[in-house]
Image (cartoon, rainbow, N blue to C red; front, side, top):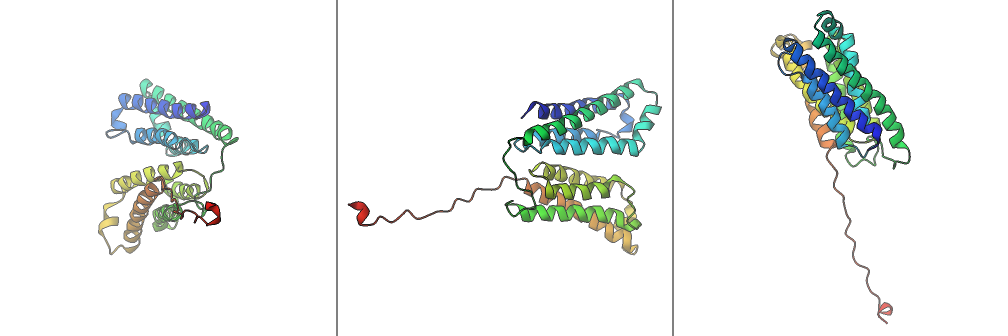
Length: 254
């Protein structure tokens, strides 16, 4: 790993510290253990697991941007700052500083890492031995994103639809296994989130056809994406073709 990649991982770990400070300052805001810690620590682990790919910091960049933009757009950041809790404010500052470091260092790491690196095939390419399962994972992400938005007339009211369409595209085009790992992590998290946040009648009232059908399509998409993306991350076996030893001719024995 180059130094910029190390700083990318360090930025994610600083973000974890920031979340821990916030949790200590206002545990009631998280309803238990902060799920963001799992995401941020997971992004750091993904960069390390796929460190041979010069593109691996992209997973940390994507997750950092998702957390930062989601917090600002959703109003959580302004709400927490308005509480006047000094320790909570410090924790938020540490979190955003870590995420910013991770994004900046990640961009540099990709630029530096690509210099002289061996070419990696795009995941959609026929050169990818797990191309089929990768395409299935992408299909699951697209299904989840569209099903999340469709019941409201394709109203993109939350980060889920846009995020999973972006994840699907990145999984297709960005070399390496890191985006697929991130997709598996987030898809699994959204399965839990769907049961926690989705209206109960969407899952239990078949007479309300549109929400009922799309709720289950959404869960199906998350499940397919989780399983298929996880499988696509597994190292592919090396197929060694067995060749017959060359037949020795009579002349070669002379």
